[in-house]
Amino acid sequence: MATQKLGKRFNRDWIFRDLSFTFQSGTVYAITGPNG
Image 1: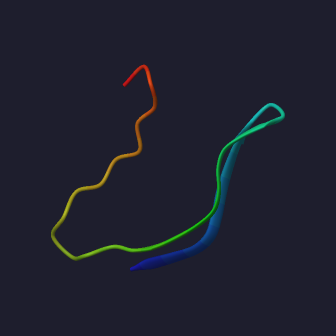
Image 2 (image 1 turned 90 degrees about the horizontal axis):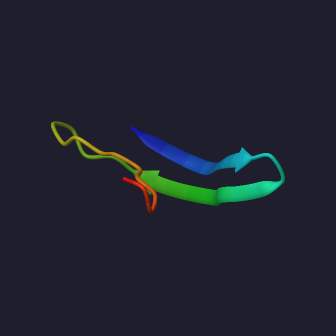
């Protein structure tokens, strides 16, 4: 599975922007910030 140009905003601030990534089968992924 792959994503292209993914973005996430919180109010006016971009958390991430234009993220493109290819996910490998059988692997678990997580996006965490400074507070875990």
